[in-house]
Image (cartoon, rainbow, N blue to C red):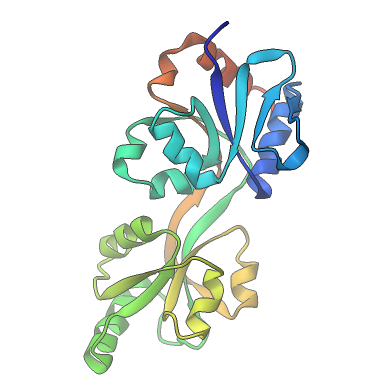
Length: 230
């Protein structure tokens, strides 16, 4: 029997739906014995392929440690991951799905902050008056830290968000946030606005291949097939 090719697909959410569309359009029928909640699956008439449903962040980790050959996830999650992970992963295809932007957003009542340079000034004043750094809540600490430093903002501290980031400034958890958004409507609905030059990263759904797996002709051919119709 040929070596098993392992493919990671997001276990839930919009990215999962988009990936399933790609398989369907390429006439690859996904099968799961226990239904939609099954964490493992296969492709009909292709016994050498195993489907594994994982959290989108886990897919990046499993590609890096070589326990997946191909994985579908967001570009934002690759760029947020450790550099050592990124070195082990190749971006094979970017799709016009899952498009969103990681942004810096502040409560509407911060009327004196419209740019990252404004934020830099306010952060210094905040430190002097309150004797602590302005707090940024985010699920993307690495990208946020790098972006802020590149913009000259140094007087801040990261608060890792594990829930709805948008609510954090209004519950005393932070002063501002960075978050991923498709249209900005959720931020606006929660009385947050995007800083004018606070656009950190444009993201979309990608097909990734572990660099070690990229040497395998069968894996490359399968990846090419999944790149044709979407």
